[in-house]
Length: 125
Image 1: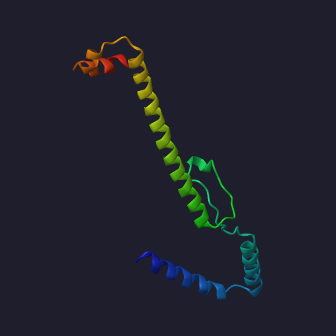
Image 2: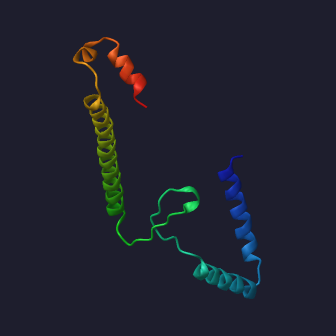
Image 3: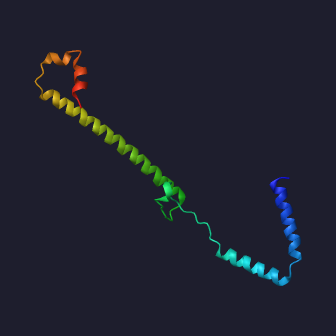
């Protein structure tokens, strides 16, 4: 016997017992059911960011596809800003190395030396 058959047998048994109840009891049960349904909380669609413990909840009445569009745009903006920030950092590091090389008292032959690149890697912090 599977779950569905078992549930069907329970439902039949309960329906048979319902006919044996006094009318006053059946009316009270029906009234209690209506009251319980009236007090039941209704599910409301709301968007929230997926975080630990729902730390950031956003309760907006904006349709869901707009929220998804805003989230996608924020993600793209963060990726672009991160790319520019990393590129700027790399340019600053290279400019510091170039400035140090230009300010130093190295002869021109040092720049063509094969060990110069190894010295640069060792000398730069």
